Image (cartoon, rainbow, N blue to C red; front, side, top):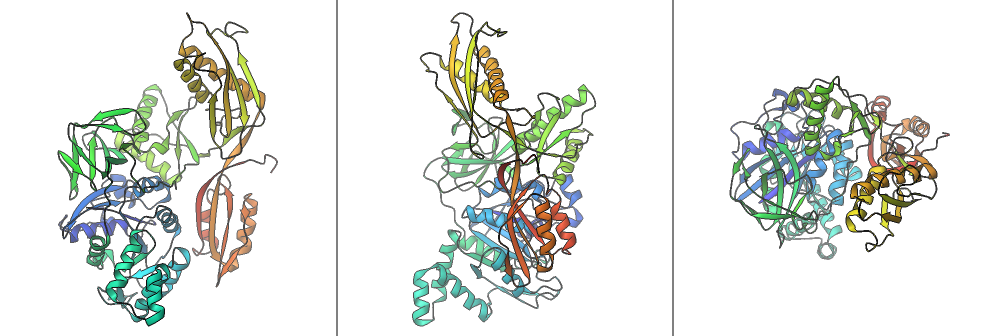
Amino acid sequence: MINIGIVAHVDAGKTTLTEQMLYTCGAIKNPGRVDQGNTITDDLTLERQRGITIKASTVAMAWKTCKINLLDTPGHMDFIAEVERSLGVLDIAILAISAKEGVQPQTKVIYNALKRGNIPTIIFINKVDRVGVVLNDLYDVIRNELDDALYFINSVEDEGTREATVCEHLLLEEMMESNKETVGLLDEQILMSLLETNCIEPDVLNSTAQKLFATGQLLPVLHGSALLGKGIIPLLDLIVQWGKTVSQPHLSARVYKVDRDSHGERRCFARVFGGELELREVYPIFSKDKRFKILKMAAFEGIKPVTCGKVFAGDIAIIYTDHLEVEDIIGEPPYNRKRHSIAVPTLKARVDDQDLAMRKAICEALVQLTDEDPFLEFSIHPITEAIEIKIFGIVQKEIIEMQLLERFGIKTSIQNPDTIYKERPVESSTACRYMYKDGNHYAATVGLKVEPLPVGTGVIYETLVSFGDLKKSFQNAVREGVEFGLREGLSGWSLTDLKVSFIYSEFNSVDSTPSDFRKLAEEVVKLAIIKSGTERLEPILEFELTLPQYAIGKAVSDILKMRGEINEPVIVKDMVLLTGKLPVDTSKAYDTEIADYTSGKGILITRFSGYQVVDEKA
């Protein structure tokens, strides 16, 4: 039982590779084509219209004695959240790279996430039959841009022509020498053998490479053309031979996806890391102090889920329930499965509504879409009452508009997004309101202290009021009121990087209610924020910009105009690497500009890096 995911930059051939693997394993009669809109995993109308993957799809196949669950993930940056959720449940990732286009922006973003998670990764170099392909040049790019720990599994004859042939078990001499060097640099025993005899048994080299692959240190490289079905069998063989699932000793399953089937039933997809899930049994949800009963469950057999009574460790369960959410853990968290966020939306957009009936329908639809993609964070603005969602980019905005029309029959538009800012208090302050005094009609007294914290700290709450003096239900209500009050600062943005201390309280044993404390705490924290004042924080990105040397002058000038920071340039041959930080607000469309002034040779990689204080004078 192995769970694999195919990841790549858009148009590298992920979905075509999925189709060919399903066909080769006998799960489908004929491989579909993206350009013909008949693929199995891109089954949404929007995916077929756009020719891109929007939602991660799961299918299953059997190769030799192994069941393989396969996740086909999106390639466009606007749907990176789908990729992030999928990475945490994989045993192996297949990183598809187009032999013609090479390493592209999304390729590097995803590979960095795979590396941080120590996820065993296979590189599948696709489209080796494309005219003009020079594989040795591509290997150099992969080594420079991604990793130099490449271990070649097969080779290609007549690359860059329609007659390209994948040599299943034949390596060129330079490839064999490269493999020895790669493994020797990662394994001391192999290195000593090479230094002493310059010779190593192929079986020993291969078994060592397999161990290094399992810990994410080494990248097996295969070649092929997914469209022509070339290189598929070696890929499947390698997955079965090198892949393995380590079962956890305790019950452990993670929900990585929520959607609705064609009948509108809510489905939760969960990777089972340990133990087993059984129909009609009751299971705990980690850290939520909740339990739920499985009343309907399925697992994948081929391209469709099939109802079953039990799902074992290593497999993926489809649980029909309203009790689970994305990222919920059933039982205990899995060992050695660290999650690294690569996705944080930094844009917020308003959804147009024309009347109350339409508004109600939009809200109901967005509740469902947010259930499936929590990053949307559908909300109503507390002052303007505008319907708002968080997004990653313009393509996602257009897709959500089309989803609202196709799935819910709602024809509306989403406004161009604004940058999501935050606010931070400028100085410490305290505020207190006493019950029945100075216009306070609540049967409660609440005193709060607000203190600014360093940027990036987040919100810290503490109570200095003894639970002996104020019971837990009232204390919880104060905390809830504070959290609600921090949703909007003086400029309309949520507050962060501060500490709120509950320092004083009084109550009336007859009249006081948790509601009194909740509502009053919201008012008091806002009073404290008014006293302290706030400063605006803007989202920033870490960037890596690779471009030809002739364009460095314009790039530096542009970055400085965008209020960016630049580290010392690194020059490699005729290319230059610039790194640093950029504000999101000033750099929204800069990747398009780079492609224009470098004739497509420039590659911009960005990653959310947190927030910084806005220089209002700049």
